Image (cartoon, rainbow, N blue to C red; front, side):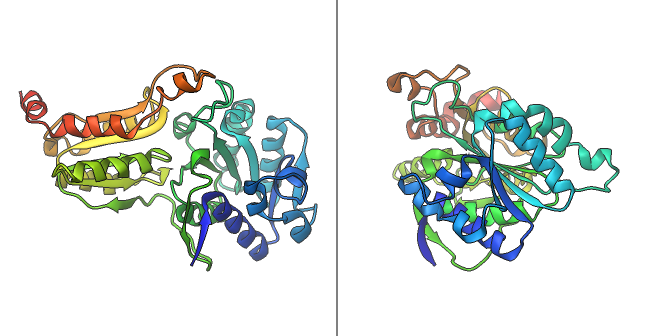
Amino acid sequence: MSVMTYIAAIGAAQREAMVADERVIIIGEDVEANVYGTTGSGKARAERGDFVQEFGRNRIRNTPIAEEAIVGAAIGAAMTGLRPIVDLSYSSFLYMAMDQLVNQAAKNRYMFGGQSSIPVVFRSAMFYGLNTGAHHSDRPYPMFMNVPGLKVIAPASASDAKGLLRSAIDSDDPVLMFEAVPLWGQKEEVDDEEYRIPLGVARTRREGTDVTVVGVSGSLALALKAADAMAERGISCEVIDPRTLVPLDTRTIVESVRRTGRLVIAEPAHRTCGAAAEIAAVVADEAYDALRAPIKRVASLNMQVPFSPALESQIYPTTERIVAAIEAVCSDQSQRRFVA
């Protein structure tokens, strides 16, 4: 085991995959110089290592600033036998490649009758909470949850980032990996050996009896802090990290809610049509009879992200908002209203 950051764990997963399989390549804007090469500066770049020197420019491919062309080239490369990892930087840049992602990556395996596979990983970073403005702060993973043919992962820890990315690279279907940039510098112990975390398997991060709290991506850490605060008040929270959003491990969540009778979901995306909305709908369908209180969602406000740090900080979930939601579902008044 080694202590490493979230971003270093991603680099470790990519290096392992490239050593193990020469078909794995990395393509994207400025990846040769500023991200995977020796030029430039910054702790995050240093932790990724010098991939260009190790693997050569044939496998670390610079591209023009043209996201649709990058994604299209990756899809074509995958259909002819390579296994590309596409570094798209900001998640907001996915919008420029929507036609390729939705009409090609997601549909080609079906349209070709299963005669082709699309083994591509599209990495994108969610720079929310860092004052990057409306064009660079989106958390668009719910949009892609609604596209059949795409898999969606959102690891919330370094160890999960490494294991999920290795499974994503192995997948014969396109996988979108959403990385919460506020997590990039967080450290934890990560296994030095190769390992994989299966897609579609949630992780119970804390066992509890009174309320189930699901924390998506960067909101998981907030959910765990809220659980600590509630434990001091005698309320036991079971905290679940879905890790994969498509396919979603609904069984783990539903079974937990059947034990606790209450559900709070926290996520950094907008409230409308978010992952929290899907999880709430599934639980309402499959475990309504077990609920002792209404389901609560703690998500970002439905508004554009302002440049002002003071204003931006009001948009996203906080530990305090999650605590308030837990208190609401555990209150006697909430239960009386729900039964009535």
